[in-house]
Image (cartoon, rainbow, N blue to C red; front, side, top):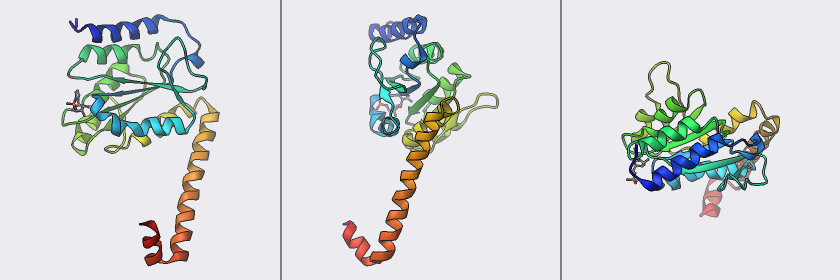
Length: 207
Ligand code: AIR
């Protein structure tokens, strides 16, 4: 049992929330966790992708946002706060989460893989915060799965999470398609401008 009062308070809040009955519209669909707040700049891509797709962040379970789809964000350290990691993974389903995005850095980036084991069968999308974290995030034994993105690609982790949700929510599939259409428009537009301006002028205009 942790002796840390602040950690105990977060665990208590998660456990109380797991016991609370709420409509699924009023609970976060995606959980974002990271090993340290020093990971936040890298994990910010997940925030950007989710908000771009119309998700809003839950900061008070008793006062959920207007948006139908939402997410929550916590710092959970596999090594500094293992009990919090366990409580987070264990309460995830009862708190209404459908998918977790977990990021960690360093060579012992174990939050994604351990959370995947604790929260199983809930899917976890792992984000290695640095290149050197890739092996520890993806290196799972047979029977203990994790989905993972390349180092730093938290934006893609959020898209993958929404792909999971979209299987049950066609409106999210529409949003993913609209996002992809915009992406294509951008490539088409830059391709035409590069061709028409020629390489030298295009480069000069970019600077
Ligand atoms: N980390 C935190 N607890 C366990 C691990 N593996 C990772 C964080 C962060 C790195 O250690 O995910 O990327 C360094 O953390 P900090 O807090 O020292 O900046």
